[in-house]
Image (cartoon, rainbow, N blue to C red; front, top):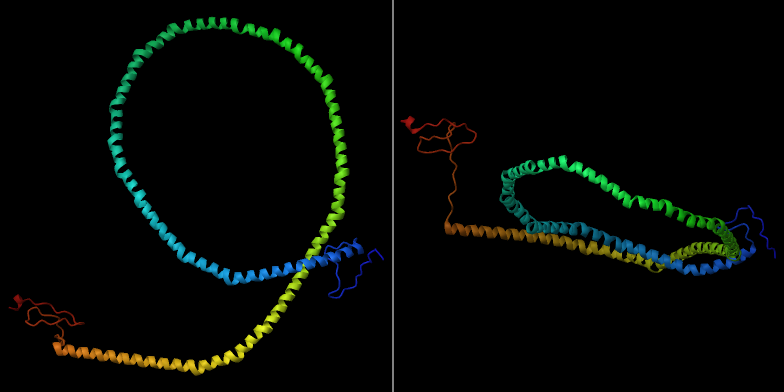
Length: 392
């Protein structure tokens, strides 16, 4: 059997012929193809039910969203915008008004019209008056007395007597303090402590560090570096190299083949799922949809037209005519009742006197001096009034 892969041809392939996968590497031989095909077959058999269930769930989800969730969301949005927001605003306004009426306005009124006037005119104004009229002049008088009777003599005594005496005493005390507490300790530190510590401790420690500890530390560091390099070489040789080889030549090809197989299987399962869906759609149309369409067009439509033309329209016209006749009869009956009531009223009380129009004299509006008053005629200018005194 030839294990070498034949050279690729540039001739065009027919539709449906075998094509190399997307992640196909030219270096793979027939053995990789021999392993790849069973893996993809098994993956297709596993993925097809999952893809069909996935497509069914997608269709159900879209139908549920279109039929239930979208109208429900619109209804909830309408309820929220039309009912809940106005109710919440009204409740918030009422709650705000009640809260202000119970807990804000009484305290504001109490603070503004009770506490502030009482504190201002009952406490602050008297205190300010007492401070300005009594305490301030009294304090100024006390300050003048203290300044001229106590502080001025004290400053004169301090400048004249106490200052020179204090300078002498300070100089003596300073010399005694240095002699007792400064010079002995300085001499002890300079001539005893520093030489002893320098030549008895620091010089031996520095010699030990330079001659012993430094070479010993260098040797230990070199030994640790050598051990580290050896441990790193062992880890790389025994762990890293096998893991890298396993990942590069086993896990990566297996993972790549599994990913490619899953992708191809998902596409194949999609085609199979669509084919099954089209078959079910064709079967449902031929078993249910086509007979239902024929029954609707061949039976329900003619029956509906017959019922509409022979039953519904005549019944509607008869109902309209009956309604018109009923309304006319009711109107006639109401008019008869009104006439009978009017005749009975006339028989009991009599015919009321109809008002007669009063015709005014042309060119004259009214005459205050005449016995018979006339109404003002619209559109005619009023004549000058003549009093009874002028008429004689």
